[in-house]
Length: 172
Image (tube, rainbow, N blue to C red):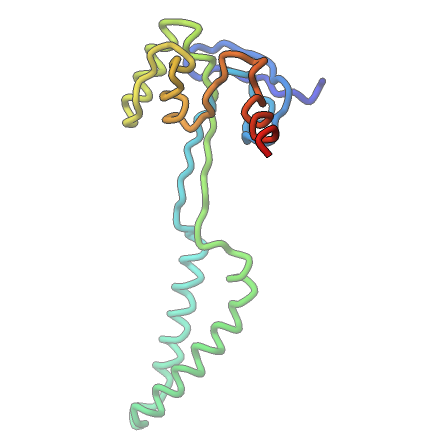
């Protein structure tokens, strides 16, 4: 499996090769237990803003060339025509220039519950951005923490998986 990614923990420097890919969770081949932290930031595209400013300037320059002795109605018609012309001139470049740029950074953290120092550092990060702290267990016995974290409740008995489905089928 030469195409596996080597994951490095951003807090401890520990590395591990990727495991089996599971497309449904969006983590690719990230090893089980590892945490992916993604920061995305949307910024205004300066090129897009320059295009908008250029269009406004071209319309304003064109309007300065209109004689001062024409009525406001004629000036408004001229302005509309200039705006249409400028829009047409910049259509192609504007269509291929997104108004925003998105920056994304990803880091990975080894399973925090495997090391008390790592868990402490991980909780400092969580606390710093307003998330609840982890107590070192993967899931609470009642499954409440799993639901809060957006995960599925873990079944303690793998042999009982699907029993509810079977009961529903038997009831039909």
